[in-house]
Image 1: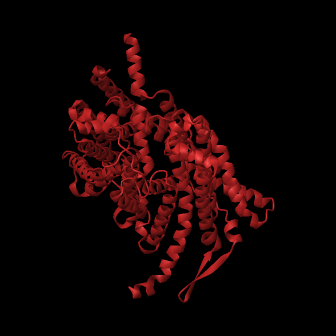
Image 2 (image 1 turned 30 degrees about the vertical axis):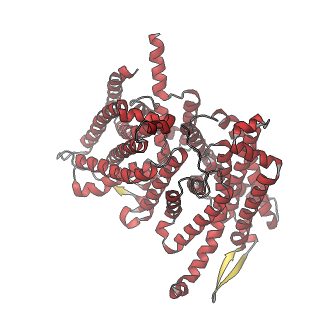
Image 3 (image 1 turned 180 degrees about the vertical axis):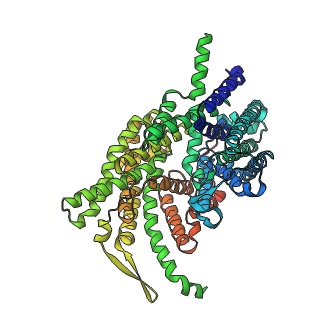
Length: 311
Length: 311
């Protein structure tokens, strides 16, 4: 299955582009899906180490607010995405130095706590963040080009797609490297890893910073797409959503997050349109079914299909 | 300093009294969460939903019975009974049909299953009670207010918040401690918490204890909600807020610690209400600051037990 990954990625990308051309409103949904997919890849890194963060919406929100604050000043989309990634990485380093001392439930809950602190600051410091009203993000020039609305939206979609490929490729290399392989060691038996002279905490911290940067990029793309940022981006349920997507897509490969994110966003849009008060319930049921009956997620289902055909 | 007290003593007094009643509510919810975690080893994200459903049910049942001409003095027993009802119905259902499938599974998966459950219950609650605020405060008004003297001033305070809520918390704390230490069922629960395998080998029916504990935890969550219902208008989202705070209490106190949960609830309740009066922007942040400060010094929580590392 691993060998088919690049090929499948191209097929999936082609499908997304076709859908975005066929229905302009889908372009918006799919850009958000790509952005979330990038962020979920960070969750995937931590899942490899057996750690689940219930607070990565912190980095989504951070990346998004970097866009909101710096779009009027810096004025170029490319620069701002880079700033979001770097800023989120720094924040991830500071938070990571603290949270990587803990494992399992404590790790998850501390991340959650950090995320809630950030959320409530966004909400309460009204004179800076405009509280729950949020901040509007104007269309910004990208790579020096001043764009009209439609071409701006296509450009952001293209950037999201391009970044998804670049990031996916890097993460694939990372997971195959000794540092990436050591993550699985943290999951199975950390003490043994340390007996071999591998600094487990350092390994986890590196993955954590990477995941924070991915969250920052995802958040920046979300802000550039929805062009309105609110504290809700950082509410803890948004963090849960990221873990949800990771499990839905399946933690097996780097395509999982995008498969999961696209499915999640589409189910959400259709469920919200058809059952306004019950879309959360539908998503919850989907999650339960996936966990109980398809533990490998969508990626796992796809792998099994391919495997069976080969036999 | 003395001058500061002269100026702010009144506010501080108010904050302390407020803090007591909110600490009582936090304790009821957190201790249920902690108990369930201690026995089942599952952090139940849906605990907050049980709290919310407990609150809504208590209000509905109260309104219904008031329509039948129930005297005001009976409103407090009604709160307790409705909480017991919610716990007795939902607890076994959730434990039997959902949690039982995931015991001993990966922690990530367990967390997500209860997250899915949370999403489902959140919408169930919206479908049943709608999104309009519901208010039913007969129990609060029936007991009247008391003038608490502070220096030369008097602060009118509701008897319900000043006496009923803390009393419930203390009775629960003492009752639970006695139950766990002095009764056979309580001791069996402690045995299962400490070493499930050994307990099962002694002939203890662990499955029954799990069911019992979860139902009891659900009742405590519902009781917290029911006791809240007279003091606040019920809106969607109260479950999501409460659960995060309870997590903070449980992590700070140490997993599975009952008395620790009481002390931590008190710290957080007081900290939060003091913040409300003196630095309202930071109200929500205070519990997490306490949590981070405690965990920096004691990574296993205030009363937590260090587990030996597996090699």
